[in-house]
Image (cartoon, rainbow, N blue to C red):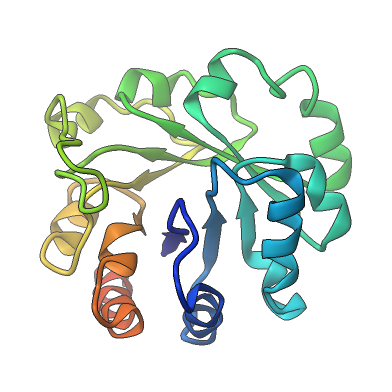
Amino acid sequence: MIVLSNPTAISNEINVIHSLFEEGLQLFHVRKPDYSLKEMISFVEQISPEFRSRLVLHSHHESIENFKINRIHFTEEKRKNNLGFPARFTKPCRSKNIVLSTSTHSISDFNSLAPEFEYAFLSPVYPSISKENYLPKTDLFEAIKNRTNVKTKLIALGGINTENIEKTLISGFDNVALLGSIWNAENPIKNFKSCQEIVLSSLQ
């Protein structure tokens, strides 16, 4: 299971991140679109070194050189505009064992991804918890029946919560990513553990 950071700074954020990792979180996406390079480095420095190998950077990819991070994520815009991929990153990624992920919003985009991407988000699957009026434009459960890309793992994002995780995984997604159901929750850790139990049960 994957968790994305809140896009802006929130209170107690680092402590929550540490607790998520201690509870078994596999990957944490650092998505802070408005952070400067200096702010990004400062943020990552606050995360314990033992957990940094499970971080995925959405921006300021060059800062991975400062930490033991080998995972970077490309937004749909950067991927489509070739801002970093494939020209800049293909060969360096292969030589440095850097793992790539990206974001998609249609199954056709997902199907056309280069095989270098280990996994990709497809969103929004449900009405977003964190973004007001961010709704699915099509029925993605029908759309993924046309999936042809089997090399890249398909990750559901958008409105994922304890009530719909099982349905999502049964319907063909390989895994789920959480954002609003963590950072909008009164008890993020309790909510994470509840989601985690459902994922582990569904994937057995």
